[in-house]
Length: 230
Length: 230
Image 1 (cartoon, helix red, strand yellow):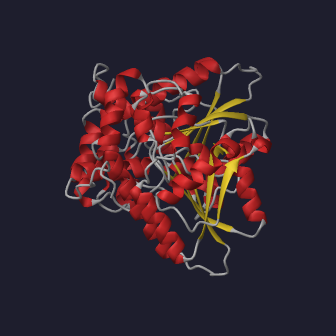
Image 2 (cartoon, rainbow over the protein chains, first blue to last red; image 1 turned 30 degrees about the horizontal axis):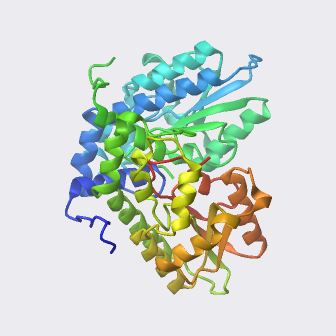
């Protein structure tokens, strides 16, 4: 080891969890099933003590700068895409009961939670959503939630939380059953581009929202250290 | 604001710089010219007090896991790509004199530094490089450094630091002058794929190393909060 290279203290849990979270957010660690047990407290502190909110705030401020730089044709075909879960509305309360992602995904419990329609808005994303609609963008929401079982609860939840005025909400129907999020969401975006829309921006908490085809002119990865969607 | 949403303390410089750095690493902030002045100390501490090294360590450990999962055909066409600057060898000492990126890029000073051939190896990346060569991969180095002016110094610097046994080093020659890194590096990768190589992995400290065409089966973004290459 060269003299100038600090040695890594492998017993430093907080440092390890910072590295783990950065590797998740920069898409270096993929297909992870649960948060490492030793990072439960780290993720709790990150999500609830202000840094998550600060991260969102800075990203949304930067998106505002980007939006202000766009000269819209105003022909009604300027589109923007949002994911729903932990992008527009938050599942933080649900994941609190799952040790912030240290427990494996529990499809039945999550379905029950989502059916309640009680996910709160993520304030910075609502601020962005409203800015886009005021500016003249057509906003499309694309979610992996099942259309038959969760469609009604999702529409109601979004509406209750102030997400209205969007152009369309796409939920996963039977024809997309079993497909990865990248495949399903690429297909939705292909439809939109086929209809003539220009996708200026695409915002999601998962890399699978932002990869594949027709991802958009700019993509924005919101933080989410609690779960991974392939 | 909902009651559960912590308010953001905008006077917290350390929190701001953490957010800024995360936004850079997750490719949300692009085309930035300098590190925000108030983050000079944050970036210095990150780069020199151990967290940068810990981040690299965790990423390289994860790449080892990925490599061990690959069943190589061993036909001599299994390729891996590395960037050079702040991927194989470090410019940290140079950037120390530029307030860790708070000063704008200085092409003449950087050229003089690179001509010295004194960039130290990044130990975790050298560990990965050696593992790949031992495993039977053909390793290609692709750098935006100018071939005529820096070719010799770069080859010597890499050799001095233990980077030998690679298949080819690509430097930027006149035919790529003025092209963005994404275009230039995509073109090199297209050549390799045209020669029959399978690109299993691609490692760089810039998103422009990892975007464009033929990026590889897996890409790995090493941290670099000191500068941005378009």
